[in-house]
Length: 170
Image 1 (cartoon, rainbow, N blue to C red):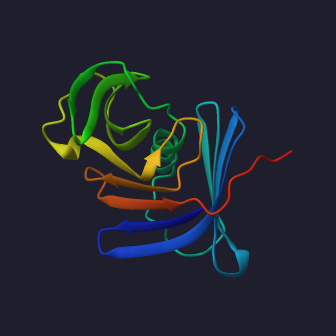
Image 2: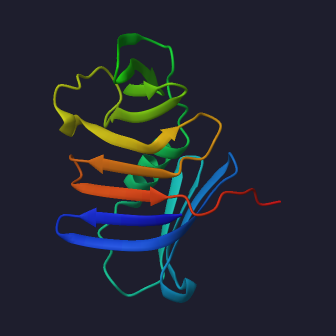
């Protein structure tokens, strides 16, 4: 994947290897000539962050990992609670793991979702209360998304993830 990360007035771009085998979740960030920048690993509830460069990285590894999981691996809602159907799509609200989710579907794919930053009841009247995720083209469950953009107004960052290659490690 190619990741572009913008935090306040700073912008970073790097390639990353993202692995998830159902037990261990890893993100390895790579710099020029595949130099390792950092590795975030989650096993169960434990998250480890290993930095391979002497530069300061303004990154909360747990939050970064959690947002990536919510964008790439949380199964989108499809018909849980259809609250509106218009020419712009089908709008569905529900919850996953205690987090309220508001999804916009077009046909069989999801184009936008807003997931609450905290578990429990919430309202989406204020967009700074959620992680906004957009997919281009529409994300179809069971496939890998091509381009994902995450915006977290609460944390003050935007992250774009472009799928360069998808495969399974034997």
